[in-house]
Length: 454
Image (cartoon, rainbow, N blue to C red; front, top):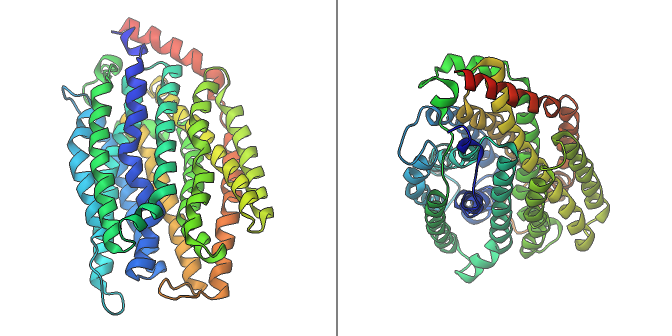
């Protein structure tokens, strides 16, 4: 049994690659274009919508923790993670449609519309997306305990996510125009992406196998909430990795959420959003794969340091471009490559903290540890979205205006170009305190000896 837990197959890798589309297609559509849809298609206030999204993200982070605990205590013939992927596949697709079915108003935005935004967004992201995303992100830790194998599984997931992000972000505006260019076009597109997501969910479940059985490792059939919280509080490396992942996620969220506005109001061509997001999201297809290869030979810490430096260089090039599309795309490409390397490496680092946590505390809580980082991640990206909306609102942005005030355009330009500086520097400071690489082999040897004696 112990030997099987350290294996994985090409089907697992393929399953993680294909399955990444299931949630990412929806996530990219929502994170990149939903705020734009609310403000420029429905006519809602940008500051109010972004604030509602921020509040919803807090619920989302809490739901991550709750669902991580549920995964750690799930028993099913389909496994702890795959059983939930099956259960949520259809509800996830349905809620994506519901989000875009927000009622329209002939006059000013109504309270009912904002209530609809909050409730539908929360059900989609805090419930359906949480179940789907946490299940998939935790799945590699149930497939194998082999660190290099997990690296390949997360790399495959990252590559699939990168391809999906590139396609959806690059062609959404094109598809919307092909489908009619109006509110109905967005609704039709949500249906198409939802159906494709259901199909890829089924492929993920069919191709992967959960070999790691928690009871056989920890010796406990159930783990209490207090045990898990105490174990997390003693896992310093998990906190470091969580904050690095927060910084990486905010790079993606900030770039994606502002790109539509930047293309329309700074570059004066809304169709250029595809070129901007393609430049940012195409390199991660190679970046996640590259992270998987490098993780086989290079320690985590130097990889993160290199990615941070690359991100700072890319951000500087974008600033120096002064709106020139070619140079701007070059900077965004380096920003995207840096983002993917950080996320690809840090996700594997999170899985490593599961083993460290068991070694230090005797409690193995992979579902909670892999999902608890979502609490910080969701609050961080939600707060970033809120800050973007607040700044744009304070600068006078109004999606119903044909021409925006200069102050609004200046705020969009500054947000798009300068936010990554802060985030990459934060990741660089955090990685200084990470030294689990040096201890990991000894920890795994010690764990194997403990389990052999039990």
